[in-house]
Image 1 (cartoon, one colour):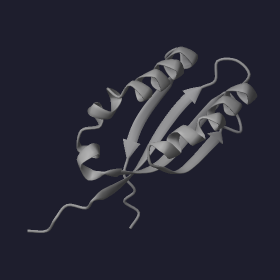
Image 2 (image 1 turned 135 degrees about the horizontal axis):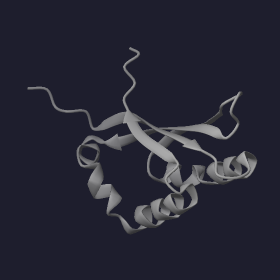
Image 3 (image 1 turned 90 degrees about the vertical axis):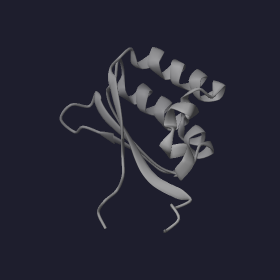
Image 4 (image 1 turned 45 degrees about the horizontal axis):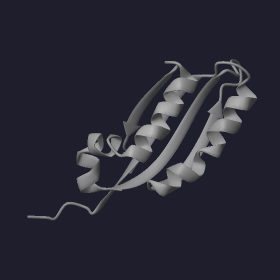
Length: 106
């Protein structure tokens, strides 16, 4: 029987509408990049809709231990992560959706 991989690659995609000046929100999002690197982030992109500048997509590529990925809810109980996410929830006031994807391009 094959052993499971030690790390899995994932892409966290956050779709949101900026509440206020999009430039200020983009600056805030960019400032979070170091945090994502500390939790395994390997790539970070912020996309802005050309026709609707308040619409943003943030893509964060990361690698996580397979065991951790199987129970992401445990990560959410980490005090540092909880504090970080609470701050973002307050700023976004329900204007964002988050989903986790795997790259199956090949």
